Length: 284
Image (tube, rainbow, N blue to C red; front, side):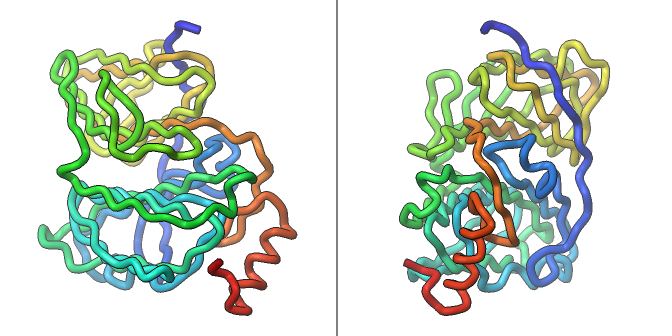
């Protein structure tokens, strides 16, 4: 197929509180997850009030998913049940495959700039890889390539490939494309995507048209979900630039059983996971 994707739906974010009191905007999640397969959730935490982020996300388990954290401003320290620890700051990414089970914490520190701004995606794992060994990938900002394309468009490539340049996160089951894209004012820009894959964008700054057939401008804290047909997306800016995240991945088409931080394929698997957690046998 050789066609430009059309928008399926546009969602506005919902304010919520997670962890021990972190204020954030949920772009999508829970009941919307089937539309976004293989992605489960996207949270945007953006505040200049330390009281809205310092309580963080104390020790909690995950199984059956991958969590992807991308920091634009601020600093987040992390530790886990495998003995890993570290911190990610501005421009850094952490890609954690929970697999068979991990217990970890993510604790924001007081931001050097006064502002904490970051994102966390959850990506589902297929049934065959739900119980794979856990792993971490911490990617520093300096290791994420930024390419300049036509008309002054810049793209940071976290995973996937753009213009022959490959991002540092590779060998992920859902074959993801994760980009941080900035399009200057008065520009029309076309980006190749894989036909049949789920494709979404989340606007960080400015506004743009995300579908040549639509006259609806999409602005900050809104998510665009495209239909599955087509091998390109076309973004058009007018009076302002637009910066957005673009995320694409191969749909799994499997049942989702989701409770809190654990996502499996059946209620029986969920019950087993929580029983193991309470017995202390969760981490393999």
